[in-house]
Image (cartoon, rainbow, N blue to C red; front, side, top):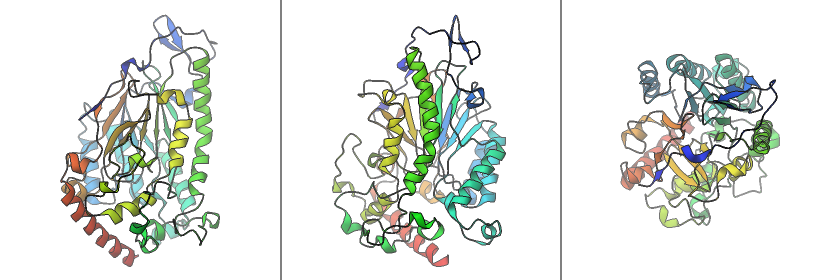
Length: 419
């Protein structure tokens, strides 16, 4: 398998300009780097950055996995007090479970924790949430962000590792899906989309302004304009990061790296079935596992191409122009429960899900999954093996995928009937 290499050479040493002593200064021998950011936005001592997603700790086996990882943490391969962990959405729909999970992470690992909501966090309904007055998804998302703040879990951008040689920005980004990642020429596989038992369609409640035009038969039931609403919320942080990069570039100073993360997928290349990242063309032959219909419908609710446009707009010079350039921008995502790791268009994309126990049992996901190290502020981005279709390359194979998808379809229908 091809390797995604270390980028210690990504930030060549250059002459450093003098800055006002009133600004934060970082010593590098006789030189100092000024990042121009408030001290409250910096986590200067962070060394390593790990990533995981889709913890789904409302499953007791997943919560047990988390407790064991955090209580018996081996800091050689797990976050420790000088590290940071990115959690890219889908902890649980239950507020108490979200709190319990974040407490285990914070208290067990003693590291900085970054979090962004996924679709499960937006679910409403049930007696507990009704008693709290959380009958709509947007207020519930606000409540989760407030909970994170009270626990010291970070949901905003930070410059981390600024006391070390290879600092990086970490930017949590809100997002949703809009049907723009749909597979072309697969409408025949989505004829039953209107009745497809996707739980979000019954458990999420959005303001009327996001209602889909009833004449839109391509993406019925998908909120209209919700992606734009969430992406607009990212703009303030993006502008602050851009201002910092601009200041450094004008002074010919070394630019920090950039780690963005969303729960939802940013482009078609990140879809579980997309087999050739360097290709913009889809081949229907990639649906070679017997569950083409599920794959085609999931693509509609997987994410949005607008996410990729936004992350690439932050500072295009970081994205590189060809594969020979070192990687300085990583994007972490969740949602699909199908591990991915590849470089496309100068950005390294990483999906490291815990997923569900049955997915690990049948090797759709590594049965020994752990927190994934993606960056070290002492050396830069950390090398990794490319992963395109884990189940095919290392897992249980196509027949296992087919059997799993059939069981999943049956299970989803039962869930919908019980709601």
